[in-house]
Amino acid sequence: MKNVRIIITAFIIVSGLSSFTAKNYDSREEKRNHIPKSNKGYEVGDEATDFKLKNIDGKMVSLSDYTSAKGFIVIFTCNHCPYAKKYEDRIIELDKKYKSLGYPVIAINPNDPNAQPEDGYPQMIERAKQKGFTFPYLVDEGQKIYPQYGATKTPHVFILQKEKGKNIVKYIGAIDNNYDNPNDVSEHYAQDALDALIKGESVKVTKTVAIGCTVKTKK
Image 1 (cartoon, rainbow, N blue to C red):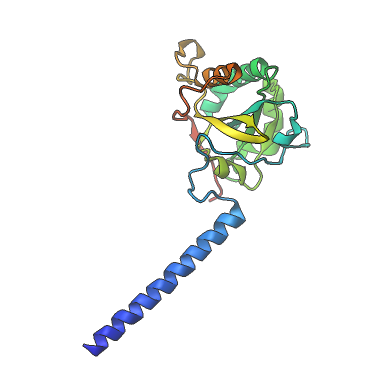
Image 2 (image 1 turned 45 degrees about the horizontal axis):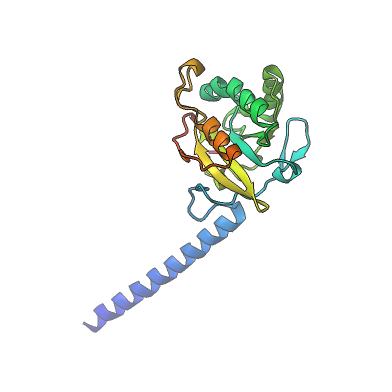
């Protein structure tokens, strides 16, 4: 009986130490990799931290560079994904319409080029030139920013609004409800959210399911 108690006590101590070590490791990983504790990224109402990423022109871009902006249309997208390609013209339209109203598009490529060579930096420059992008097209080197946001697809939209110096998430999800044909769209999620914010109204639909390709990470 005594031996059983000793064995049980030893098991509890070892389990406790293992748990403590695992928690400390997880905490270090979150801090080192800037991973949100929930691993789910931002929710509507959260403050989105700024970033500094390289644009296709070689310059570094941050949200803080846009001193007169009222908010941002942050879109995680890429070169190769057929869904992303379908939405390119609509993303350009969003930028042209809402940039002058204080909400510019900031596009970010979250994919690792080693996992998907078509999404490399030179290919980004070429794609932006071909399509005539009117907005920054940034590369998430080291893939540190997309996990913060919780982006899982390309494209994946995060609409932010400046409030007292903070960038507050107001909408997360898809651009609209028909990736294949813009003429068949019946719900313009991103536009409706932006129109509401510009009018000073609450966004009615704050979250939808993003439809697209998964973010490509290093294996």
